[in-house]
Length: 153
Ligand code: B12
Image (cartoon, rainbow, N blue to C red; front, side):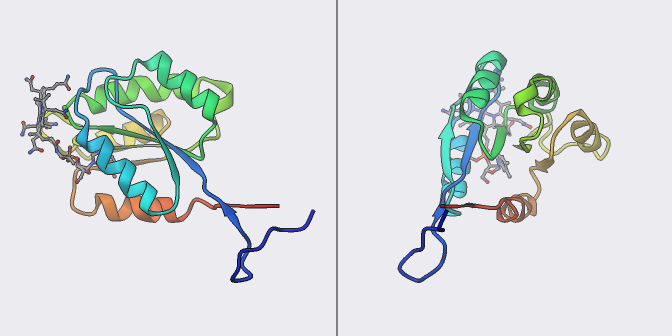
C-alpha cells in the first residue's frame, strides 16, 4: 500500500494517542491540564481522564483506547502508594502489558521520593518515574520524543 505524503514530500503521520490520568485519591486538576498541554504541544492526541479516577475505570479506559502511552500524574502526596497499586492493576491486564506507563508529580508526602522508592515503582511495572525535581520535565520530554509516530499508509 502506498505511503500517504504531505505537501513537503514527507510521510504523513497520524498523531499517537496518550492517556493522561489522575489517581483515585487525588483531587488536584491543574497538574493534569499542564501535562495534557505539554504532551499536545509535542504533537500527540491526549485523552485526559481527569482527577479521582477509580482504578477499574482507569483500566477499562486504557483497554478501550489502547494508547501509545499512559501518563499518571499525582501531587497530593499519595502518588507513591496509589501508583504502586494501580500499576499492578494495569500490568495484570493482558491487553496492557506492552504499553509504556509513566508516573510523575509530587509523589511523596514531602514532595520528592527517596532513592529507594523510585526503583520500587519501576520494579512494580512503570516504564519511567518523573519525580518532582527540576530535570523531571526535560526527562519526560526525551521519553516522549522516543515514541515513534505512525506513518499513514
Ligand atoms: C490548588 C491546590 C489544591 C486545591 C486543588 C484544586 C484543583 N482543582 O486542582 C485543593 C484545595 C482542592 C487542594 C487539596 C489538597 N491538597 Co493541595 N495544593 C494546591 C496547590 C496550592 C497548587 C497545585 C497546583 O494547581 N499547581 C499548578 C500545577 C500546574 O503544578 P503542579 O501541580 O505542581 O504540577 C507540576 C509538577 O508536579 C509536575 N508534574 C505533575 N504531574 C506530572 C506528571 C509527569 C509525568 C511529569 C513529568 C511532571 C508532572 O509538572 C507540573 C508543572 O510543573 C499546591 C501547592 C503548590 N504551590 O504547588 C498544593 C499541594 C499540591 N496540596 C497538598 C496537599 C497536602 C493537599 C491536601 C491533602 C490538603 C488536605 N489536608 O486536605 C488536599 C488533597 C485533596 C485530594 N483528595 O487530593 C500538598 C501536597 C504535598 C506533597 N505532595 O508533598 C501541596 C504541595 C501543598 C503543600 N506544600 O503542602 N490542593
